[in-house]
Figure (cartoon, one colour):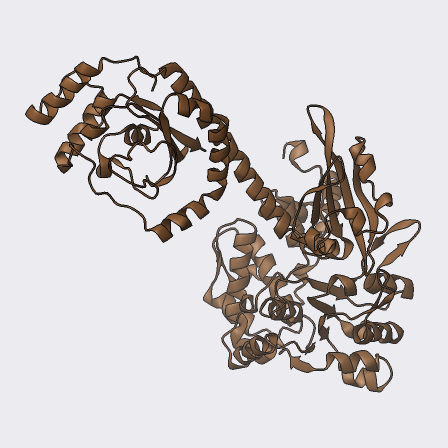
Length: 627
């Protein structure tokens, strides 16, 4: 708070009147008056500096280490303005948000009574009324005249303190003190304090941004270099240091430095996401590189290089595009002894690194079990890559597993490479042609060719395979790759058909209903006793997948919260036929049941949204027609 110069003799009279008679003169500044009253209530000594709370010498060293960045910056500010402090006999304190003095500068204001003020706590409850305590309490700069201070031996000088705020919160306090100075140039004093306050606040904001930037560059799988116009490295992250191997300049390390578009950036031309090979004496890096010019006042002064290993980029893309497990082992439900034994075995096997063969009828939940095993394994943070095997052309399968890349198109990683470090789930593995199975087995056994090194690179991949048939019999007859069969047979698990765990039907059905309500943001629905009896009496040849289809249809076709037996259309019931394709009334009924929601209707009728839009147009329905 900017204040006019006050008559110190009058201020001294107000102080004496309060100390001797307990009377507050109305001319005392309200904030000072409030502080005096609190100090009096605490019975704080006011003649000389009391013994206050102070950090140990070891703690002071640690304290300064924590605040090293702000100390170094404040040191620089002080050096730039040192002549003002010497000329006007000023001292300065840097205080943290808890009231502890981090460092003192110039003449120590309190040296009459305290040999070293660093580490001392200077809150109101410690030293009474001061510019620091008022600035801290009211979060504004405050100029305080000597006789307003609580400690009488400090009355010969004046003080001014300012909070250093970032994001609306006080981070530090900067305080100026005069020593035996009656004619201070207050305007210069306040101008200097406010300038330093602004500078420190801007520094803290930039420091926060810089720390976030460093966190990002260290956590992201990217190598960062910042070069000045002479090619000197001004900054590089840890990934960058690993490549430099102790050298100071990029041209000392990379043999093809002239072919990296750094010079172009320093001339103002950016290079965005270009494939660049970084060649050192010992190894080669295949990267996607961006080089950007950095301008200051419209002139290019430096260049920023962001470069990322293509291999790391492929893994990142694998995560970003959803190559992760969607289900845990406990998203599979059941209470039967058979199911609980399966779940327990899966949890135990997940902790090992064995390849796994899941055998069972279609619809028993092998895919969900594979996801759960991956999520419960030490590989859970790595990609889960799924391949639905089929008897397709060798070219398509080759691309699926090994990727593609030629001079006409950018390289695309195959599923084997994407699953490195994680799990490769081969669904319906029995459909894979023998020749392709042999090739996949060879790659898993011997590794993939690495064009960077020109050598075979071993694959760190766990295989989980799912099979509806007897895979051993197919391999014995030569209808399936013997090499791939031997590779996936580390551990086998039989996934039970639903008819062998019929007591789990109720639990599974209710779980599906809960998932449906949550997924579609609709009210919960429940099965009546008769409906449950009907479900339990069904043999479920299509297993859980078939049960799910029946429950989902009942969910969407039941207007109330209770699903009755009449709402359920069992497998083989002719009312389940897709009459909506040729019956407008049937389609309208389904449309209304879905509440006009395209996604819900697509789920109910098991068709794509494109097909639905065609029928909406055919039957003159939909929001565009006001219906």
